[in-house]
Image (cartoon, rainbow, N blue to C red):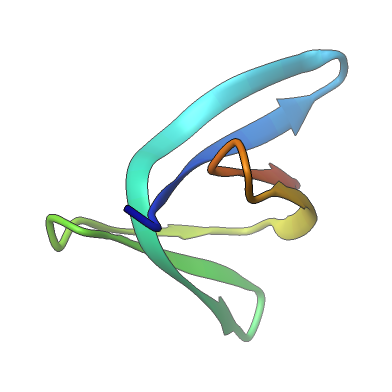
Length: 61
């Protein structure tokens, strides 16, 4: 499977925001996340890093 879990970095903490994310699309002032189940979220955040082997996407506000 190629989906990833998305985490928001807050200080030294990582908070899981969404599981099984299939697409991450840039929007004017943030990112639109879509899961393999069709769930969508919009976040005012930027990509901090990707850990593709671990299926993780890290974001920062």
